[in-house]
Length: 141
Image (cartoon, rainbow, N blue to C red):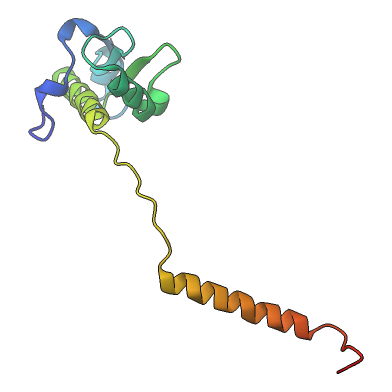
């Protein structure tokens, strides 16, 4: 596991389900016969590991990796060894959970400055005068 993402964001072992799959890529016959790829499944809704707001953010962050039942599936098949792919999948899940634990910053509304308001009103008056001048001249003009 990477030093950046700690084990504390990884759910307990009994909440994770692993399947090993065949992977493509370089490796010749070995790659066609051994299941080195890892498919890590984590049922967010059934988990006792996270709070409700964290679960909501986690499913939102997971995007297409989460199905309609709330199960996140992470596939790791970049490495040639099963052990490294297992570590990679767990590290990616932990990083996702870590991001879900961070509360999003609330947006602070910005107000236009006083000078910007004055400038806008001045331009409006100017455009109004230009449009007024386009009309037909009256009898007294």
